[in-house]
Structure formats: structure tokens, C-alpha cells
Length: 195
Ligand SMILES: [Zn+2]
Image (cartoon, rainbow, N blue to C red):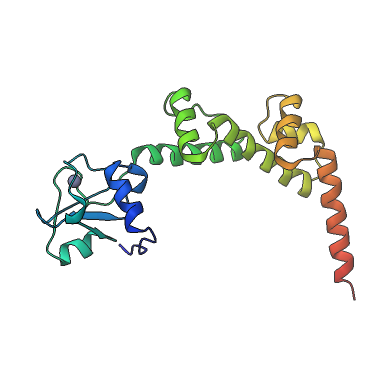
């Protein structure tokens, strides 16, 4: 696997090791010179002395230097993040449900997903879904003649009020204003293209 060279400083990597910071898993690996074993930053093994620690970009580099992978954190295996997986799956489901125009229930509890979305996407699942629906609505407004209420319904909003609220939040304009701006821009650019 082609890894980017870590652009982290030794101090940053050492801090991640001492705090067992799992955000750094995948960013680098560290080995302990005295035991010749290498680990992921979040490994629960006993913390090494700093003077014994070496940093590596990937498992290949560590093994080339004669280090063996730790049996606890298995730094030789590709990083597996089941929670990230769950968020990605749910994003896929939300996308599909939007385009198939039908609602699907999430695979795990909404509360759990909301927490994961906040952790991985910086927003809740509901907010993420609303943002995607607002983007779908913008597409319909710009490219079809459908009236605003049909657009709201077709992009998955349950009520006109939530449509207006989320649309404004995403585009900082009402649906009508948005459509007018899009039209104006289209007319302008087609005029400019004329010789
Ligand atoms: Zn380990």
C-alpha cells in the first residue's frame, strides 16, 4: 500500500503515542528499538521510553529494518474502522433513498448513527440528509420547470416549512431566489457565448 510520508513532526508523533491517540492510526507506526516490535499509535501495549522509539511511514519500512508487528494492535494488517464503514454505508443509503424517492430506515439506531455522524462528518445524520436534500432540490430548481412545492416533495422534504428552512440554510436564498439567480446566470453565460 502506497502511504504518504507522514508530515508530522517527531514531537507530534510522540504525543500521539503517549496519548494512544487513535486519530493517528494509519498516519504512522512506531517501533521500539529494545524489543524490535512495531505498533499503531493507539496500541494498548506498555508505553516505551522515548529514546527507544522509532517512527515509520508503514509496515513495510518497519519490517525492512527488522521490526516485527505487535500481536495486540496488528500494525501489519490494513486499518479497519467499522464505525467509519457504518457512516459510509449510511451515506450511500441516504443517497440512494433520495434518488429512488423512498425513505429507508437506518441500519442501526438513529441515536448511534447521529453520534457517529457527528464524530466523522461533523454533523448529525439528520442534518447531513437535509443538506443532501437541499442539494437535490437546487438541482431540480435549476434544471426543471417543476414548481417549488413539487421540488420540496420530490427532494424528500416532509413539509414546506422544513424545505424552506433547510434550503435557506444551505443556499442562503429562498428556492425562488435561487431559481431566478440560476436563470439569470444561464442567460448571461449564453449571451456571452454569442459572437
Ligand atoms: Zn501494538
